[in-house]
Amino acid sequence: MTKTLGRTKEQTQALKVVVVGCGRMARAWIETALAMKNVALVGLVDLHRAAAETRAAEFKLPMSMVFDSLAEAVKQTGAKMVFDVTIPAAHAAVTLEALGLGCHVIGEKPLSDNMVDAKKMVAAAKRNGLTYAVMQNRRYIAEIRALSRLLRSGKIGDVQEVHSDFFLEPHFGGFRDEMAFPLLIDMAIHSLDQARLIADADPVSVYCHSFNPAHSWYKGDASAQCIFEMKSRAGQPLVYNYRGSWCAGGMNTSWQCDWRVICSKGTAMWDGEQSLRVQKKKPAKNQAFVKDFHEVAVPVKAMKHQAHDGLIRAAVAAIAKGEVPETVCTDNIKSLAMVLGAIESAKTGKKVKIRV
Image (cartoon, rainbow, N blue to C red; front, side, top):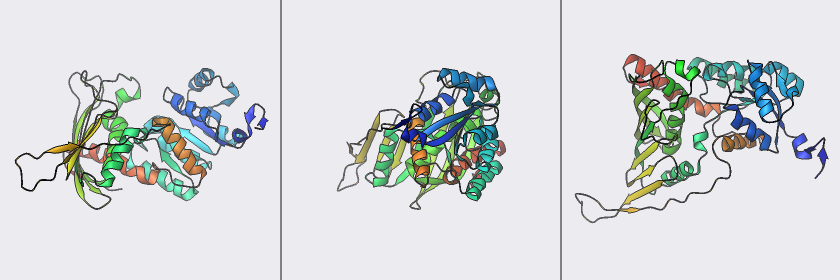
């Protein structure tokens, strides 16, 4: 294979990428970028130059790849894609600048921390003929794909209810500790987006009660309970219940939540990791007080690339082919609308219609 300056021919023709935001989360993005043959990582940018220099040193990258601004990085390198790994409050500014510079964007969740900016970002991507995709890495897990395929097959009937529990106690420090709704805006976006995938449905309304337990170290509400009315793509109504806490010590769920999906002919349960069970009602001639069920096998297809790695690779491949990534902003804004609707409900104490 022909090589040029120590890089393969494929790598010299690769899509040039700049990473903006070089905190701890950037490690996963940088690792994937460096492992992809169709991507060339050409720049690191951070408001705090030392953070970018730290990542460069960690991955043994030349300090010439560190830039003080996105504009400078794109101008000097000819980058055509930006990985936005900044905090939620900075997503709009970074994405709008990147799109204005002619770069596609794959950014960390959530799309934005408010709907006004989110709509500006979606409009800018359309106006510039570019793609903006959002990191929803929980979609790229073998078990959730298997569950989603099973439910779409109709094998256990129509989805009627979806329930998820999220109970963990992570001590991040930093911006999350100061957020007004840390669980909802920074973490629940994962679960609510997962619910859309699992149920193949979009939101209609929400009632949410959020609160901050007395033992919480967060400034804002670290716990919440939400009831979402949703409608499946087939037009069927369903209900999704979300319960979560970011200061729940002991008996923790997985980061992917603990799920129960009740359908017209059976129930599926997934612990967010490798335990995926499905039971289907056995046919009966007469109505029984308690019906019998049988286990349904759920084939799980191995995924070579999962989580952040899986989404980045899939999104880059789609963009390179001129196709639409699964988590494109025009779709992902519906998941953000669930988060922002829940926050509005929590503030007002009322049920809120969700509109995009």
